[in-house]
Length: 151
Image (cartoon, rainbow, N blue to C red; front, side):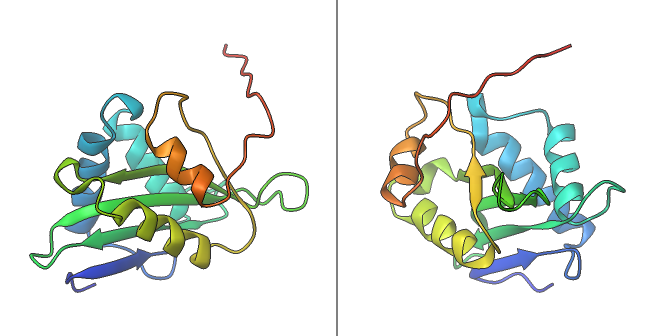
């Protein structure tokens, strides 16, 4: 896929090149900072979205580039396959380059993700994450308290 200003959408049918894949994983790892995960986990999430995992239903990744074709924002959304009782999609990662935060790029990415996804979208956000306010403005609500049991 040619890289130019604007959105690139990667799906199981339109996969990124190896260099685009590495660039996306590196970008998310760096820009997620304390809210992120190890690169290996981000790469596995992308593989899941691209249906490269036997258990995967797919999903998509959105990448937003500036006029220099540099990534300034990105998100990865995985399909859950659990429509009607759990949202059909989960937004796993979203990040905006630190030098462009506050310029509406996150909102643009979220709106494109909402328009692209088929069905409802769930996401997890830390209470102190400034992005929480954007999600609320876009209509996301906090209906549940999440609890996890870890082995």
